[in-house]
Length: 70
Image 1 (cartoon, helix red, strand yellow):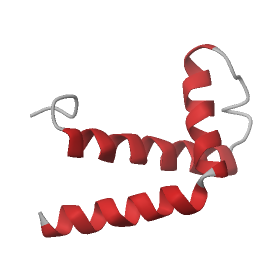
Image 2 (cartoon, helix red, strand yellow; image 1 turned 30 degrees about the horizontal axis):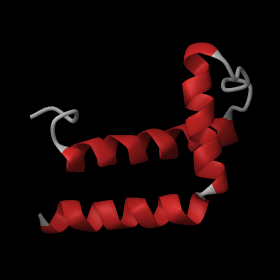
Image 3 (cartoon, rainbow, N blue to C red; image 1 turned 120 degrees about the vertical axis):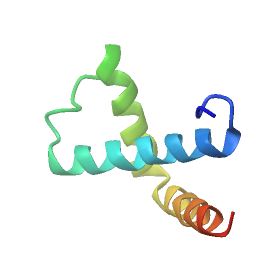
Image 4 (cartoon, helix red, strand yellow; image 1 turned 135 degrees about the vertical axis):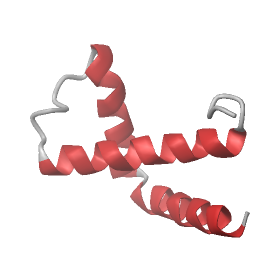
C-alpha cells in the first residue's frame, strides 16, 4: 500500500521530509534559500522543523515507537 492511502505511512513521510529539510538547511543553507517554486516547498518544510522543533521531535519519537510496536 502506498503512503497516499495509508495515513500512518503518510505521517511518517511528512515527518521525514520535515526533519530532512531542516537538517539540510542547517548544514547547507544556500540550497534552500529560494522561497518560491519547487524548492519553496522544501524551504517551508525546513521552516516548520525550525519553529516547531520540540513538537516535530516528539512526533518523530512517537512515530518510531509506533513503528516498532505495530
